[in-house]
Length: 382
Image (cartoon, rainbow, N blue to C red; front, side, top):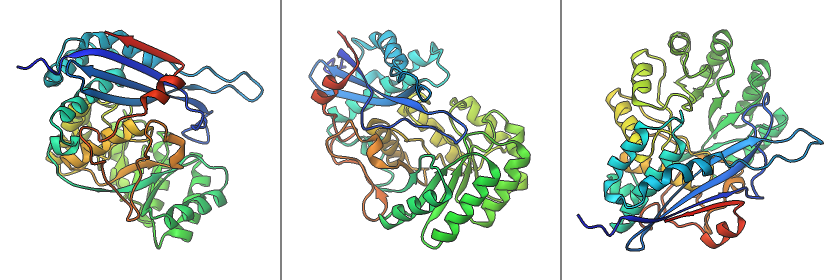
């Protein structure tokens, strides 16, 4: 085997982009400050592979000093990435397997980024886009807009109207997770835009079973595409009971159950209508690909997570287009909040479809000069 794709240099950057505002998942949560963690691998022949993912730290309360940006993920990458030096991108599945066997992070974030960067490098060396390297199942995928938590019902109505005007055909609503308020909000949004939009609701595992049944029945009446994370991911019995009581499709959050064994258990229990995970925390491209294969064997799909910066979006997009078995692509909005790494933003077309860039591998390389200048933490390993 040629050693041209042996890894000879590893660079890690942690950046807190000034264009990315503090974020919160529900109206019950405080805001967090977002860090973009970027991994850059260089092979002996100069070919590069990269990957990125977000991490966060709670933002200070009003009047307190602003929180320092998170550095946990970058530090963990610096700890384990040296194991990849001298390994080849052609050995990526063996390398990832070794890393995952010793992983003590339940969400496998650093290990996932290493795997994605190795796949990117291999596809770049083959001079083909990663989605074609994986199989080329589809050329495009419908995008849905994934909203932040907004303040008032009128804000949602106006925000969703703007998304519809810009070509989005579906929107996933993040909300207060107060069931009475949530029901009023989804009713108002549906009344205003139901004729031209489809909807999903994500309540971030904050309901109990009784509440989830009440809200789920209303979502079914409004023909929502799915009801995401109504219960804690590990409550398989609760999900199975909820599925018996409501007609709206159910998805887990996909953050705490990331292994094949967990997926099998959930499917066997009849807990979910579709799986949900992502390559940036399930172990990478190959590991998330196994989830897609498992879903297909059970007659369902995996709705991949891609809320974050471009590296996370690209990994999920290429996986979905390469292997199929996904219905939608998640696009965070406002889009500019998570457009930092690339000079040319990755966005859906006017037809509402998301297509991968045409270049090899992930299809685009970050602006390394800007990232190196902006990084508050860097590691250079060789």
